Length: 461
Image 1 (cartoon, rainbow, N blue to C red):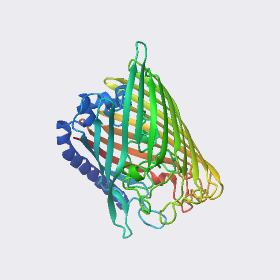
Image 2 (cartoon, rainbow, N blue to C red):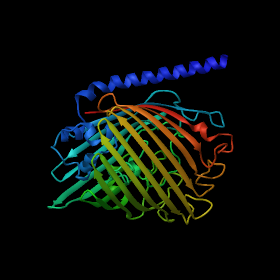
Image 3 (tube, helix red, strand yellow):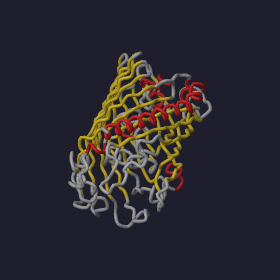
Image 4 (cartoon, rainbow, N blue to C red):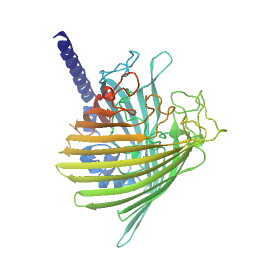
């Protein structure tokens, strides 16, 4: 009886803290949100739902994709500033590791997570872009265990675009300069924009484990220069080359540097190719895309002090992906669905990453579907599955030395006003690092990492 009462009190306390976080965030952001428009809405004179499916950032509508493919140049020049912030709370099911220490250091506590400033919009009739700079409030802990905040470069994309319009066809030609592979993409099946759009950053066990290198590992580490075309709203094709974002490009990787153990700079050898093709079709309220892409990168290792080693060779990653997206947008209903599959081959002749072999593979499948009613009330359900070859060095946290992780994430969310979204997610793991039970050899089960996540996301002028 006493234990049940204690659980009830704990749940009630968690609910009260969650309610306080939501109300505080709404008070903080609602006043500015209803009186000011973010950059692209001001520029085009359109509401958020014109560019974002059901108002759910960052999912793009056909118009939103057209705006981005045309280099953010549609409309008129305006004040190029906007801001974004998140307040959230995460609760890990079993928050104690095998040594009795907490896994999520802010378990069940509301936190101010991160804030971003954007410089973006139309520069000329043919040039536009956006640059994001983000402050992470709980970025890392120093040697004394004290949390450190950090400002750093975030997603950045600048474009030069022109169009050739004929009687029976139109062709968009563009150049893109960016700092995160696939951030230039306009579909939410691309790794940089794939679900979950907001997730716990404070809990190390809440996120999907061991994703291919194209899925975030090179973000804000590289500079990519590429060219693309979009013909008759049917065929999209792109070629891009990536190199280390150092020297004159270091502003794209600001916050990462050689010798920084919390944020070491990743160095690539030479120029590394990326290719993308997609077939698209729109009819009535429907739109669909089927695509494929490939990335090959060669990465230098870092030494124990986080400095690059340029004289011992590289590890080569080759990622091949297939993706698809479907949208139905007809007020008051919005339905979106995305699928992403990436197969990664790793060639590591010097055993910088792998320990048991000189080659390995990693495969990632991610599926997501959403329904939004009246651009206000939404539900999503996603499935993720990672598989790959075992390795005692790369996956030392697994008793089976396996990356295999699988699970589901249902979410409900509410958009009370433009530029404010409140969401509640639950990530349930059916497998974690190769096993359903005792995956670490110390008795921890996959579902021990299940995480409840409440967030408030808001943007303003």
